[in-house]
Image 1 (tube, rainbow, N blue to C red):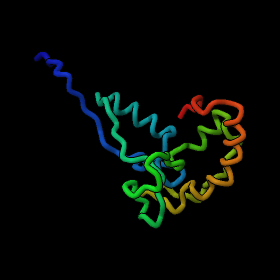
Image 2 (cartoon, one colour; image 1 turned 60 degrees about the horizontal axis):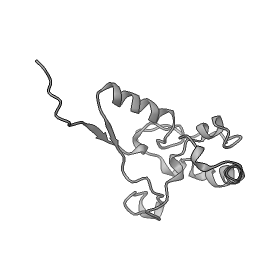
Image 3 (tube, rainbow, N blue to C red; image 1 turned 135 degrees about the vertical axis):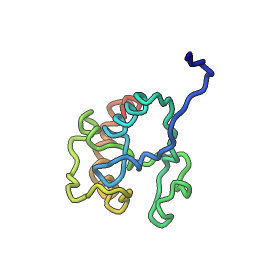
Length: 135
């Protein structure tokens, strides 16, 4: 039986936090790349993401109650990829964060982001354009 090309395609709807994450929630790190490869192997063309804006505890970590509609959530940046691409020099270990079936926002990298990355990223950004950041 010949399959007719109708111009249609399929994909999945899944938030990035649904991926396994070493730091309490999923991010655009190695697990995201693995997921995209699996989608391609399954013949899927699209990965629709839910809002990626900053969230806060007082709003129940809901992406539908954003602090800003123009900002991206820094929690979805994989710190190990920043280290490997030399955007930051190191990142504290989060060995205490247990991988669970539920997104663990209270123990995620948010607790470490500000003091660890801020200065390093700011000084790096002065020397090279942000568009070269490959996430």
